[in-house]
Length: 128
View 1 (spheres, rainbow, N blue to C red):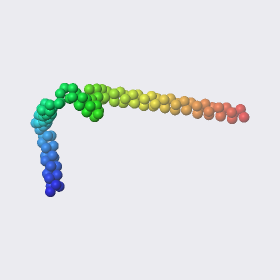
View 2 (cartoon, rainbow, N blue to C red; view 1 turned 180 degrees about the horizontal axis):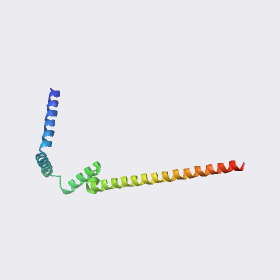
View 3 (cartoon, helix red, strand yellow; view 1 turned 90 degrees about the vertical axis):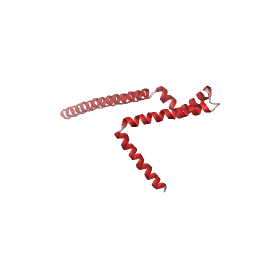
View 4 (cartoon, one colour; view 1 turned 120 degrees about the vertical axis):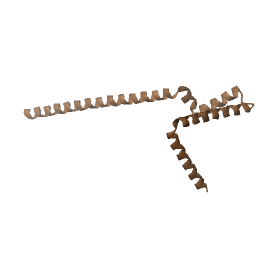
């Protein structure tokens, strides 16, 4: 019985996904409304509990946000985090470029040293 219920939920979910693709505006309006109603419900619930005043709410919310790590990501913004990641990628690419240039330079130096070594060996043979 549980398996049949699970299968029916999966079919319903697949049907919803297909309709979301066909009607994205309706899906967006429905999702936006659900989010607003969720926050209204949370707000009304907080109003119904007498000890949840300003300072208590600030302490509770700051604690949850700090513990979960959401405080910094929300207030610092994803833009800053993405900017830092892009900067790191740029530095990595610049470092890779520098390493590639240094490798090419070292290969040139190695070729020159090999040429000098050959010249020295040929001079030593001619002197002997």
